[in-house]
Image (cartoon, rainbow, N blue to C red; front, side, top):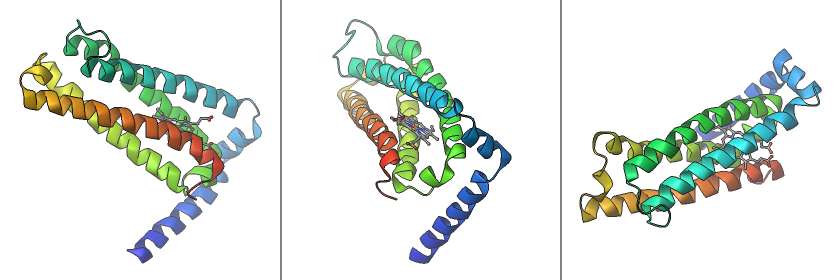
Length: 174
Ligand code: HEM
C-alpha cells in the first residue's frame, strides 16, 4: 500500500510539473487579472452552493419555510446547487492549472475533492426520491430519520469543504 501511495504521489508530482510548464498554465500564471477574477467567481459560486444547501437542509430540519413541501424546496433550490457546482469545477480546474504543485499533491486538496464527491452523492440521494414521490421523506418515521441524517451529514460535509478550500492556501497537510 505504501509503495502504491508513493508511486501515485510521484506521478502526481511529475504531472504537476508538466502541467505547470504547458503554454496554457504559463499564460494563466503570467496574466495578472485572471487568477483573482477566477477566485472571485469561485467564491461567489460557493455563496450560491451554500445558500442552496442551507435552504434545502434547514427546511428538512423544519427550521425554515416549514409550510412548504420538501419537493417544492428541492425543485426551487437544488438546480442552483448543480449549476454553481459546475462553475466551481471549471474555476477550480483553472486554479489547479495555474498552480498545480500547490493543490494536486496537497492532501487537504485531495480530501476536499473526496468531500465534494460525497456531498454530491448525498444531494442526489436526497433529490432523486422526491422526483417520483414529493412526500417521500415524510411518509414514515424511518424515512424522516434518514432525511434528517442526510441533512445533518450534508451540512457538515459542505462546511468541511469550505474549511479545506481555505486550508489549501496554508500548505497544511502537504
Ligand atoms: C468542484 C471542484 C473544485 C475544485 C477543483 C476546486 C479547487 C480549488 C482550488 C485549486 C483553490 C485554490 C486553493 C489555493 O491555492 O489557495 C480553491 C479555493 C477554494 N475553494 Fe475550491 N474547488 C472546487 C470546489 C469547491 C467547492 C464545492 C467549495 C465549497 C462549497 C470550494 C471552496 C473553496 C474555498 C473556500 C476556497 C478558498 C478561496 C479563497 O480563499 O480564495 N471549492 N478551490
